Image (cartoon, rainbow over all chains, first blue to last red; front, side, top):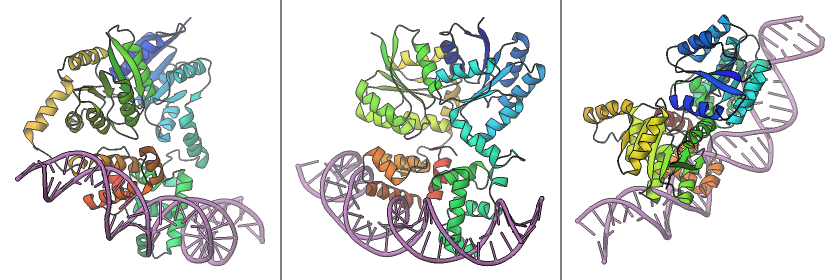
Length: 215
Length: 215
DNA sequence: TGTTATTTTAAGTATATCCCCGATTGTGCC
DNA sequence: GGCACAATCGGGGATATACTTAAAATAACA
């Protein structure tokens, strides 16, 4: 019997497109579609699907909360997150909420099928793109999954990162912090290594996401 | 003969889903798909499609710039923006760049077909959701807001700014744009002078504020 | 048509940064 | 004491950036 699937995404185009793709497969069947997390929870209750493919950001009730509620009503249902967020934080929250899969929309349809097959067999499936940063954020710091700049970076490093993102040069930072340029440089290097980022631009965007500075 | 269509979106799922939907229609044919604006421009040149359906935010070269370049190569091609941004600013820029349609991803597939039919007939198509805020932003204010990255910077400069803010190095940009590193460097310098900004970090924050890239 | 402005292109040079290496000091912890 | 880590500096070579200058190619416009 075909795997019964519910799709949840606030973009109709996405729902229709995914449905059209699933219709090519005999062993998977889309039995319901939801535009909001709340609708997804309601449909999951009513239709008892095998798998729910869930966007993270949705109006009314986001994918994380919706997943939590669906797991509460029946832990046997499998939820796969399908989202544009490659940010590890979303993945962590989604998995804590009970999701058994996490895929990025950048990925091909083939990957969704693979994920669906995995979760119905009881296995988990993580998008290759997310696995690295997820493991990094877990192994790097176990206790507080918060992940972000806090806990990961030392106070001094956060200080340097913030000033860097504010546009200060190494020389300015060194002068303001009464440090050698070399020291500032070392901090910058360590930050990049810890965060696995390669450019100043990446650092700035990271700092903005973490709320260290404003855009 | 069927309308020849090129799809451009950085999410593969979206591309595949849309293609699956279009395959149901006899009178529309997807002849090419692109993951970046640059790829879209290249494909449009090579395949001479009737219509390009273009996402606004894409890596490498955003939909607005890509539209501008496609219109420059052949004003007869019709570009339809398909995006999640209901923000009137994006719509305005997209239309100024030469787009003849603007649809939100919240809309149903049926609406895309309608938009495609409209633009091939030479008409324009605006998503109902966007028309209101668009008119509001036009009547309410600003003959030429001038403020933003659009108007101050040249197309090439915006292109460089986006890639810079995405974390690409001068060498990468030079290679992707088939330019000397020195040229890329000069553009960067001119951008800084025009915007009166002193550091890469400032440029990145500016690009984020202007919606050229995401944090 | 000719003249001006802008854009795009690029080289030269001095300075800054990146990224490897190593080193010292202090602090908390088992 | 031994261990891990934070914070502090330095050397040195490859790379990148800041800044100036300037030649083509386009666009704008009188």
